[in-house]
Amino acid sequence: MNQAAKGGHIDAHYQLAHMYVNGEGVEQDMKRAFYHWEEAAIGGHHIARFGLGLMEGNHGRHERQVKHLIIAANQGWGVAVEQLKM
Image (cartoon, rainbow, N blue to C red; front, top):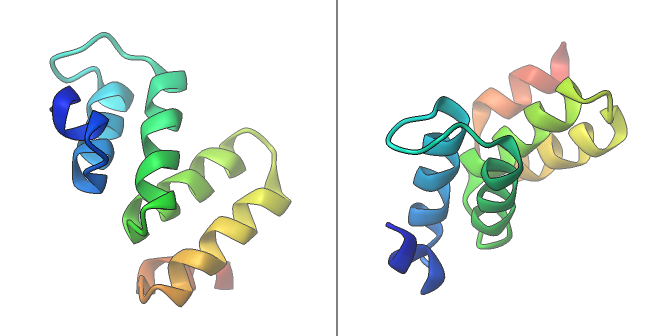
């Protein structure tokens, strides 16, 4: 998985982020999760972009949260649209 992420595969970055958030097969590490979510989001992964928005909101950075959610919504992720309505 790490090799694929190093090769720029956005799904690998997304999967690694998920693993780091949940401590699945790796030690839980939110900084690494954030890094991999950013890499996947930059590559166009709409669910990773949504996850970044949630993380930003959890850390009180609501302006950044909204920006990420708008991007995810524009990429067609309906869950982001619903989150923006809240």
